[in-house]
Length: 166
Image (cartoon, rainbow, N blue to C red; front, top):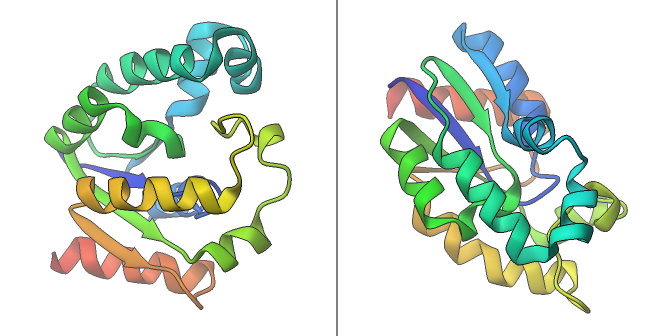
């Protein structure tokens, strides 16, 4: 299974880099948030509002654990790292690449987190979310690409280099 799964915080460029990476590799591109929306017939923010964070995680886990593709760049939602079965599955079908970015850079890139369908607990800030998630991204990553100070093209080049040489 020759897939590349991009993980990282919302705003780290999983979808943006993913689409261009897929073209560069001659792969398909799969945004699993869109698969979730299609299967559930509602937007992520709706699912989170109606099912709560735990209900959303169950759906996210199920959908990501049942992806069967080859030669595909997969971009799951940033919260997929809370789904052990999904992460083990994604690791078993290809390389997992963590797009790492500092909290400061993410803050600049992100607007309204809730509007983006980001899984936040009541009263949780971006900084809280960052502290909680980074160890999980690092735990599951086969490869870490530090995007700090890089533009889109430089980040893409770094990912491609590591994939080809890794």
